[in-house]
Amino acid sequence: MGNWQKEITTTLLLFFATVIIGGFTGHFLILLFLLMLMIIINQVKQINRFEKWIRTGGRGKYPKAKGIWEEIYYHVYRIRKNQKIRKKKLSRMIDQFRRSTEALPDAAVVLGVNDEIDWANKAARETFGLKTSDKGQRIPNLIRFPDFIRYLKAGNYKESVVVPSPIDNRITLEIRIVPYGAGLRLLLAQDITQIKKMERMRKDFVANVSHELRTPLTVLRGYLETLQDMDDGHSPLLTSSFQQMQGQTERMQHLVDDLLLLTRLETQQKKTECVDVPALLHQVCTEGDSIGNASGRIQLTIETNANIVGEEQELRSAFSNLVTNALKYSPEDCSIIVRWYRTKESVILDITDQGEGISKADIPRVTERFYRVETKRSKKVNGTGLGLAIVKHVLMRHNGNLNITSELGKGSCFSCIFPVNRICN
Ligand code: ADP
Image (cartoon, rainbow, N blue to C red; front, side, top):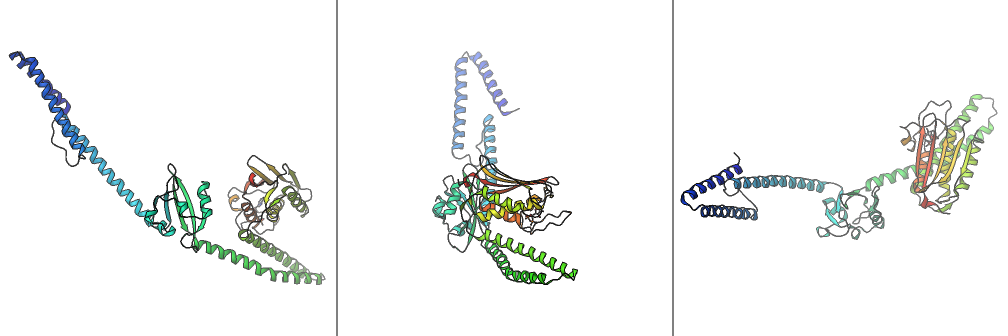
C-alpha cells in the first residue's frame, strides 16, 4: 500500500472511531471537531518543519516523518541529490574546459555583446598583454589597430585579419572572430610570424631567381638569333636544333615573365585608376584575333559601358590570359564569345569557348601555380601553368573573383565577377 493510501485509511479509521464513540457518548460533533483540529494542527506542524528544512538548504538527511510526508521528504531529497551530482559533473566539465583552453597555444577571448572581454585564456593574456582587471573592458580600447577595428565593426567574420602584436610589433598575429550564441563571439589569435617569414622568403626567392634569369636568357636568345642568321640550312639537324632551342628559350622567357608578374601582384601596392573596360576588351580581342589561326573566332559583345576602378596593365594581362586560353584549348573552327555585362550586384566578363572543357576534379586546381591538366591532345599546347594563377590574383586585387563552369568535351566559361561598387563611370 502506498503512503498516501495509508494516510487516507488512517483518517477514515479515525473518522469511524469518532462516529462510534460519538454515537455511544452523544458528543459526535464535538469529537469530530476535535479530530479535525488535531489533523489540521498536525499538518501545519509538518508544513512548518518542511519549510524550515527547505529554508536551511535541505542539506543532509531529511527529518523523520510519517506517511505522505515521508514520501514528500524522500522525493525532494532525491531531486536535490541528483541536482548536486549533476552540478558536480557540470562544474568538473567546465573546469576541464577551462584548463584545456588555458593550455591552448592560441589566444582565445570571449567577447560580450558590446565587444567587452568576458574571459581570456593564458595565451591571450600573454599575446595581448591583458590583465585580470581588463575583464569587462572593450577590446577596441586594448587592440587599437585600424584594420582590427574595421574588421570588428564590419561583422563579416568569414575572413581573418592580420595585425602586429600590440606588445611586440615583430610578432604578426592572425585574428579570427567566431560568433556563437546570442551576440557572443570568440576571438582567436594565432602567431603567424614564422609563416609570414617563410612566405616572404619564398616570394623573395622566386623574385630574385626570376630576375637573375632574365640577363642570361637575353644573352642566350641574342646568340641564338645570331646563330640562326648564320645557319645556311645545310645541316637539317643543326636547323632543327636551333628551332628547338629557340622554342625552349621562349618558353623559359614566358615562365620568367609570368613569375615576375605574379611576384609583382603579390608584393606591389595597388594602383587605382578608372579603367575603360570596353576599350580594353576591344584591344585584347583584336590582339587575340591576330594569334595563329584565330582570325574572326572572337565575338565580343559589350552590353554595358561600365568602367571599373583598377590597374589597366593587370586587367589586360588577366583578360588576355583568358582569351588566349580559350583559343588554345578549343578547336580552330570554334568561336569564342566574350561578353561584358552588368547584373544587380556585379559587373561580369564571361569568356565562353566550345573547347575541350575541364573535368570537375580539375576545376578547383587549375588556378594553382604550375597546374596543367594532362589530356591526350592531338597537338601539344604550350603553356606555363601560371596563367590562371595570375588571373586569380589580379581579380583578388580588384575585389573580384573567378568563376569557372566547364564540361568535358563541351567547353568552358570563365567569368570575372566584379562588385558594382568598383564601377567608376
Ligand atoms: P597554361 O595555359 O599556361 O597551361 P593556365 O594557368 O592558363 O596555364 O591554365 C591551367 C590549365 O587549365 C591549362 O593547362 C589547361 O589544362 C586548363 N585550361 C585553362 N583554360 C582552359 C580552357 N579555356 N579550356 C580548357 N582547359 C583550360
